[in-house]
Amino acid sequence: MSRLQSLSSLVLPCMVMIGYIVGDTVFTIWMSIQLDQPIAIQRLFWHLSSFYWLLKIVCPLLASFAWIFKHYKIAITIKNSLYIVLITCLLVLMLNSLNIGLTKYLYEILSTEPFMIFSLKISPVLNILLIPIGLPLLFWVLLSIKLPLTHQKETQTFSHSIILFLLLCAVGTILYGVLILCVHSYFTLDHIKFMLCIMVGCFIYDRLQYASFYNVERMTIGRFLIIAITLGLFSMVSIVFAKYIVKNYGAKEMASLLIFIVIAGLAIILSTQVLMRKLCYEMTPIK
Image (cartoon, rainbow, N blue to C red):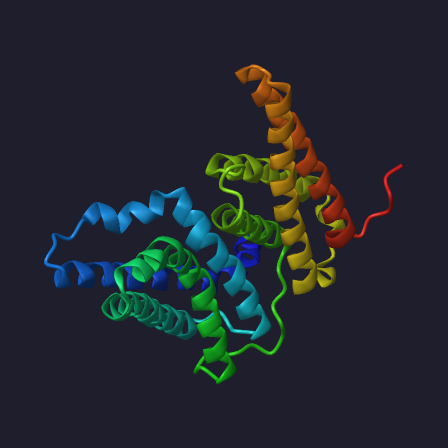
């Protein structure tokens, strides 16, 4: 029972995910009807098995909404859960409709060349950032103007396991954002998978070895963001550095893979352990 209670801080963020899935599904069906196209059932469920969707939607929404609901002390009740699902669904429908409406409006007022620039360079970025940034921002605005949600008196604290899980989500989101916005030639989805697997191993080790050192009061949103951003950027740098060495030494395929695993893997292991011990745990220096 205590384990279930420790996961309670993810209940409301999971309601957000349910609301998103419902809203996105309704929007997809509505667009299929408008365009007089057959409704692709596989399209509706493709997201659930896509690693892109995991990094693009699931990770950022879980990480951001967990902190938003913690900050506003939203209670975990059936009423709140239903409200959150409904509001999220409506916001997703609104954001997707605005995106389609903006594209249609620009198509009508712009000439061919500017519209092609928008479609090829600006629109893909907007589509990627629309839900991960737009949805939490709108929800934050609504919470600021007093949504009819029940609040609890005390601020909810995150357990050690939840913090590690949210850190993994945040790092995955940062790496995906870097992949999309910055370094296509050096950074791939396989690299993100590799780094996240290394972090999963590190976090499991921390959970088993250092759980008794974890101090809940030390994990503020500021420290959380410092760890997540630093791990994300350090992962990117270690990948680029490892690939640079492999490229310059011209090793064979298997040797190149081993060099990459050792350099990038050790770099992220060391950075994870240093950051977690300095910012997440109260530990005396290990002699």
